Length: 155
Image (cartoon, rainbow, N blue to C red; front, side, top):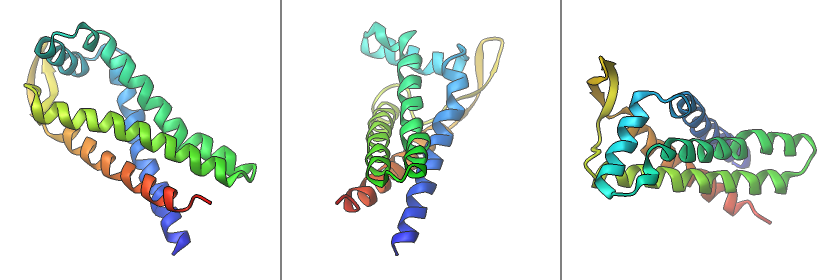
């Protein structure tokens, strides 16, 4: 059972990290989708920090979470530091849970909505999808799994 739970945790961590790392190219390059999302949140909230800083802040948090979920724990396991690996994965899951909680709340309770632009033409969105919202929900659940399993494994 312990081996099965460890596999589940690593699969959850890999899923979260894949989602986070694949989105960095959009957040750090000025892609119109993050601009659209964070501009809507800025205009709705009146908080100027949402855009242009929002994609960078969230992107850095996601990169840190991915490092803490995969890279550092793997390095700690190679040096036989199981407690450090476990604690680092828990820290990465806490970051992921925070980021994804914010994403879910903003999708549900602001003008952003569940569907966001996926295709653009001449600077205007032409296709929408709930894929970002769905991936946020699945990532949130994966972070909860990592926290619950690793929390119970603490000495």
